Image 1 (cartoon, helix red, strand yellow):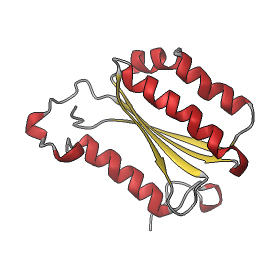
Image 2 (cartoon, helix red, strand yellow):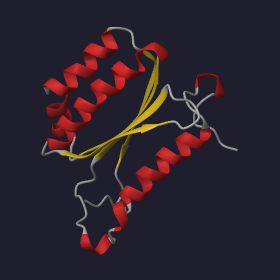
Image 3 (tube, rainbow, N blue to C red):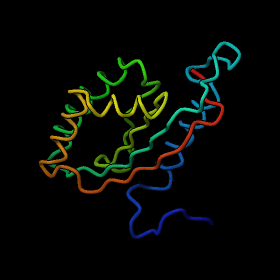
Image 4 (cartoon, rainbow, N blue to C red):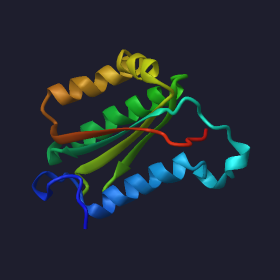
Length: 144
């Protein structure tokens, strides 16, 4: 078995990681909500895909969900944001994955300047995040 991260620092179960990456792969292949790839257009150049793994302190989960709901809703309105999903580990309710897809680096920069993103930064500054890791990729043959 190949591991991209030492087990001691893994934030979530392998099942959740596989589920998150499967979701990203499915979206990248253009099959979101049963749409056929032929009805969608390929995003070119390849978009930036962020998979953010988070472990939230148990007493801060409700606050996290409130903040991330606002961030998610605002992000989905940004012209350069192609996808923004919040996933929750079914085996550990304190663990989450953000799946974010942006048109390009400029779109990521614009996102980081938005008021809804600043809410996320404010939440992190209060110490509500126990662990965080970010995997940055490019969307191969991504369709939207």
